[in-house]
Length: 278
Ligand code: TA6
Image 1: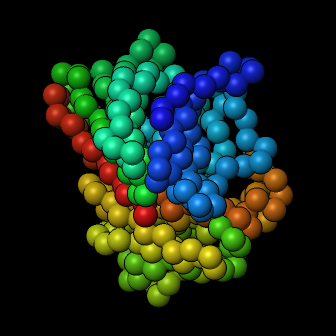
Image 2: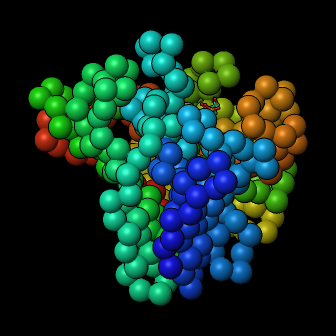
């Protein structure tokens, strides 16, 4: 069942329920902020104090960082781009069967976007909700000039506790440590006892997240970069819409085209960043 819902303050979202899972996706930012398989705890983390207000990104779920990851050259522009606070349109809702539902949300260029990023584009997010979470972010260049994008599906995973979390699949991969701006190489599994903010490159295999109560897999296509982020204590205290202990129960593993993995999209061509979480 796919229904359109509205909060008392007018914030609109789509609710999806089928025999395999449930999900909620805000039209603002095409922001998936809830996904849980039937009988399980939610897979996505959502801040208990997140905003659900026009113009403010939801804290948690899967923010869409587009058409740039991080900061633009113009530091006056919003970090992680403008797509996550723009209003998208729902262009398709379908149910393949009782265990799989899909929605497609679309953002196109506007007077506002052209002031920040001078290109004509169409951006589609195709979300499929089943016992797997599939997200495909398709950029189409409607302009007469090629453009370069960096992007990420900035997925916040819910954890039993950060001290139990282990990420496998990035061993020996180079990464930019965003805390020191130094290039490093991953040695072994990733565990957490401090702030971690890393952009891994040359990623070419599935990533596994081990938590005390659950093992999840992240399989990406058309992406060779992955961002791993936990703000730990001090940065959490400086983050908007996060309780001070939020870092204990969240971890970002972001399917990306970031930094060296930027992608050029030629006129009338498309690039699709895909991730499957299961
Ligand atoms: O993806 C990691 C990161 O770039 C962190 O450095 C931190 O800034 C995080 O994204 C959250 O950014 P936001 O703009 O959502 O507060």
